[in-house]
Amino acid sequence: MAAKAAQTPASTTLHLGRVAIPLSIWLPLTIFAVTRLYGLVIIALAARHQVALPSPDHPGIYQFTAHPDSPGYLGLITNWDGQWYERIATLGYHLPGPGDVGAGDALRAFAFLPVFPTVVGAMMAVTGLSFGVCATAVNLVAGGAAMVLMFALVERTTGRFAAGAAVLLSCSFVAAPLFQATYSESISLLLVCTVLLLVARRRYGWAVVAVVLLSLTRLVTPPLAIVVLVHAVLRYRDRAKDPIRPSEVVGMTVLSLVSASSVSLWSTITSLMTNGVRDTGAIRGSVSDAVVAGRFGWFTNAYEHIGWIGVAGLALVVVLFVVVAVSRLTRTWGAEVRTWFAIYPVFLLFVAGVHTGMLRYLLLAFPLGLLLVGSPAPGTIPRKRAALVGAVVVISLGLQFFWVNHALVVTQLAGKPWLP
Image: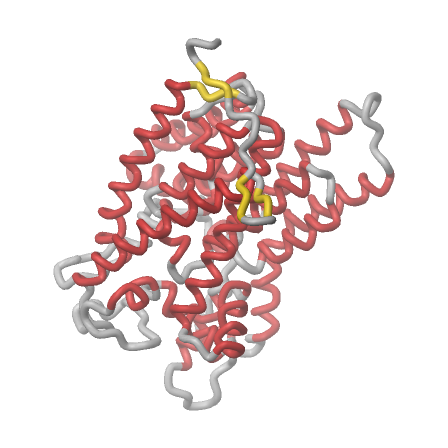
């Protein structure tokens, strides 16, 4: 073991005057800060290639605020969905009056969930700062907190090396620049990690609150019902050594039901808010819309292009995720992380189509990076695994520059643009 792994230092607390900051806080925050500075540089460089928006060459791109060409860092991070969020943060959700200009835009805004733009809008109202500045501040705070919770979640069962690697790989992922752009990914990841950690620590009541907030941020709550179910089964299996209190049974039951059903919370709210104008085509933002329409994400796309062979191939991918989740490779990850590792990508295969936006969705699939780490003994740093993580991080950071220039930037010769 000594030849393959180095022991971690005994004391890793950072002292700033009289303030002692444990490694579990300063390390993930440092990783996040350094990678976001790198993101700032590549986004600022890429902004030089941005065309003026709105543009007659790109009529399908919604623009709430006009931008000149080469709009700089703040202009670039507010592209795409950021323009819808800026509209909501500035104007809120409202029904158009008779003859209002842009009535369709007012209704389509209901497709975007409220937590992120509401928080940013509140900060704009209090500080008087611009949307780009406030959105950046909100996402940097939420993203940093998400990394701290991710570190805590992984460290509790797998150790510091795996926890640090999970944070580093998440911050270096190809679409990670969105953690500082005007998207809801930072808050979504914060809430996902919050729910998983609360479930692991058996704080079911607070987890219900986090799930409801998540359902109003990103429609990814159904997989959490499976996480709670697996957690409950394991607790029941060990009930002789670890009795389950009646209040915990109620908590797990409520949490699983809320996780499964809250995906329809925003669509229900918007249906009530838009009552009487449903025929205008307002998008109410429910993933169930695709299922009702007979669409099953990647499975439908695979069947349409290569037939049942494609469907069978995706079914094997689903089986592979489950097999890996119960294998020795993931044995120290903890039941909650192992279950999220398997169920969230499978959920995406069923509800998301095949497009470049899938890279954004995978930002919440942080346990995928742990496949490079495996299940090392806590307190050790396997050198080969560390070298592999380092190599992947370098490659991923290089790919971020390519991704920003092709997905975030709108160029004159882009043709059909990628979707961030």
